[in-house]
Image (cartoon, rainbow, N blue to C red; front, side, top):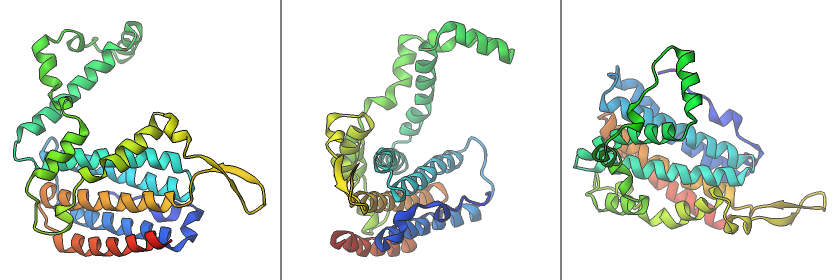
Length: 277
């Protein structure tokens, strides 16, 4: 694996606050465990289940990095939007790796065809023709010629809403008999997904989060409550622990339960700092 982008060198001025600095440093150590085990794993076959997991984790880590960067630069709404995405990533990932029904992986794979078909159907035919001509390739016809049965098949993954998926995921036996493995993802659906979906969709609720606040110069400017950056980074660490621990055990075949449980205890202590800040 290539050397990783050093997130800590690019964080914003809010890291001057001790709790926020601690949350950022903590989350970096969560990912460091995953990266070390991924490096030790050795060669991964293209097209394998492990290759899928590694690519999913790549997107998850980039999203985690972006949350910390946005939050520490006081870019709170973008950080909220990304935390909502990070929650969805963790739910879908955990549903797949915990699910004893391997058909769910096949539904996930087929959903890619549904996405491609939906994109192609909405593109101006002239644009498709020009793109095909530029590449010297024929225009694909399958996205617009799928039968009703084929469309139904590739849409199976999207039939389950995220909250139901989170609840069913929680109902599966935990991977280990440890506190972190027993953490419920469904319990955060309202707090993270529903609340921050309002921010993503620019709902009226999200506007109410913005209010005038007096700054050091004595003037007023619009901002959001000061507790948000630390809270967003703190919750990101929780999601990262869950997904990284499961990725190591299932995706990489390496059990790092003890390391992640130690981090979970540390995270609980950091939670106390957040409550008293």
